[in-house]
Image (tube, rainbow, N blue to C red; front, side, top):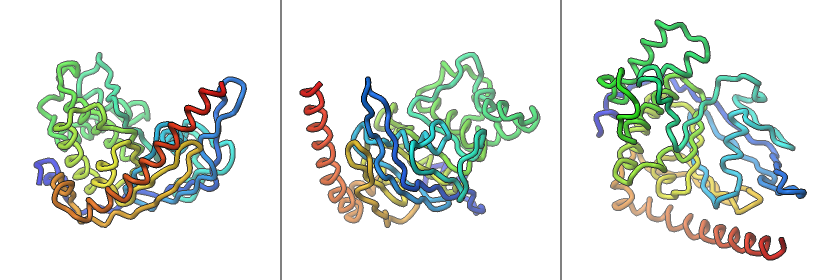
Length: 282
């Protein structure tokens, strides 16, 4: 077990809440014509569940995240958190992106405090909570460091601390490890799952990496090429804590991967064929 996962493995009350998409349809304007992105999308995620969404580019994965994060409204249907419509100004959901988006003029600790500062948390409380989370991600010795001098992996750990220090009930993750090299990415995956197991927010995780989705998730949702709709909803029955070795050693893991990769390849081929037809007709 990694040092970080061990340090955070403790009994806590589940903090996550349910998320539900009900008959969601959404489109964007492309020139003068609407392009359907989500088509009759229905999905319920249980409190504290870790759900990954995988699918071809343009199938609406990030659009779905944006709806939960109150960045856009569906043109039809509804999205609910904890059984209630998402409210303007709600603090229930927080984002973690592929790029850390740290502010270069702020030190490590003040970057971690940023979200709390925006939400009006008193300075003394911000400092205490930031120090607690910097210890959890093993960066307390770098609290006053310039973020520009940190490695990419360390910067992403600052971003994780900045997000989780806000105690979100729903964590929206859009390819958060995609910018990391393979070794650092593997380490971050294991360390993040240790943090999640201790805190238990509900997680919606968008990725193009099917192995990553299987390794981290309770369920993997496979979406069809545009217009986005769910074609596979697979429960991942692997024991926790998850380890990178499962990719190589677990026959169950391999079966999940082969079953879903075949379907994903079909959806990618369909998306490419549709794009060729659109380009031909444009």
